[in-house]
Length: 455
Image 1 (tube, rainbow, N blue to C red):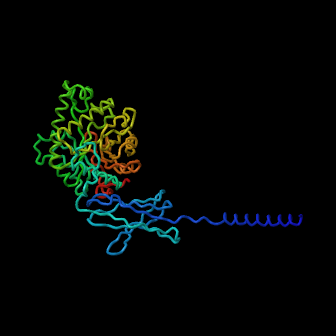
Image 2: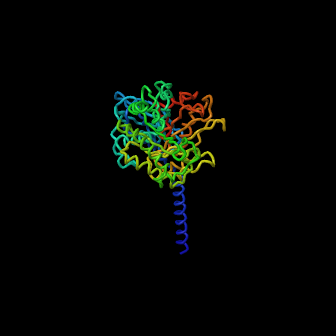
Image 3: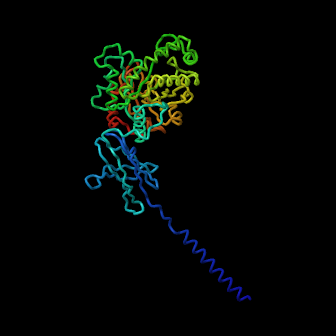
């Protein structure tokens, strides 16, 4: 019994040693890294000539600073067109040329001496068409009877968003004979968004300009510009200007049809809708941002009760639709939060809107460094699909030294990139328009085809 016990002990020890050795070998076996993969996607896949499109690339496992090779199919062979590097997420984004109609095919490579790190993406395509693609599926808008022009404009803006592109915009003062100067001084450089004010457009009808501003705006839209419209109505209670806060009873415009303020305001609005009907008849859609910057205290409609503000917005929409105006995208436009005197823009969000935008000015008299305040933008963007920088630029700049490149830099920090950024025209607040800023043309040239890459 003792002899068998000893043998059993020896065998057990040998087995244990073998298991330990086997486990050690298993632990010591090197881990095999996952094979690298590349995916590439063109967004959007179909665009008209001149509209933005990007190539989005993703490398897995993710690694920063990896050099990739982008190739385009041309004349039966693959030709290298770019060598971007990945960011920390293993992604890279490249703007594509859309100057010529036709199909473009792309692939992306990662080259390496190690086989497990080599990768080639599937081929992806971009279709550039001579004319805009059909607006299908039709974007959902707050106007249930929105016309084709409005729906096609929404679809176009959605393509800009997919491409991570921000259009360059310029406001015009259409109540002056030199209303087109902010565009003409730029020469052939492209501006993608043209802004105007509804009240100034109404005033221009009596000025006898050689080319009526409404006709010029229709021509701009037909040439490819997106039209953005603000409205600075006179104070209906005091008869003063839009910045007269001696009267600011929004409740009278909602709940008291017998009041003089109610009758005055809505009569003016009915007259302005005739101008919008003229644009609608021409097949032109407009982004309309009424009662802008209401979270500030400088317009008669500023700092309203949120419930009253939403009711007033709803009435504007209902009366426009009742008048047969169905060419509008409704935009809630707030002021950037730069101090306690500016309220939370989220509190004033209307019940129904198609997009939202931020107005932001850099007061040169307050801070010498060029910047673009963005307070409140991300909070609104968390609730809104389409966003824009509806006004931007310097204030109190006598020499135009402000660099608009800060707009692009600020836009790239935002969780939801803006669809466009529009600069104002020169006024009592100093040099503001693109052509008057010393670096304005340089910035515009950096935004290829009038689109800055911000996605």
